[in-house]
Image (cartoon, rainbow, N blue to C red):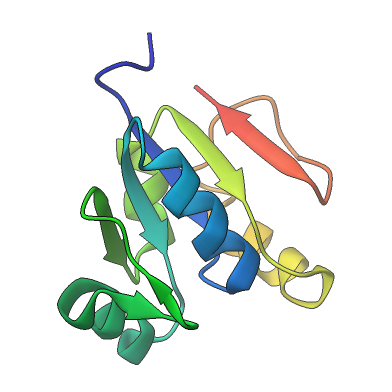
Length: 107
């Protein structure tokens, strides 16, 4: 099922970036970052938080895009940003919903 699927990562902090790089060893990854300059660094410099970005990772500032394009989504934001992100993606998120703070969402 996941062999040709895009996996989403919501959050481009240290942990989200590390998880995205690990997932990209075997899958295409679409990673959400809330700040445009972070997306730009990931897309064009291929470097973020002192981590080289795997070629299979694409970045976006649209959490909606991640929800629409990905069949599996890892939510990798800290507890301070979790509630706001969940509110933002609620209209687009796959079921079952709502997730816990350590969330993996699957369509």
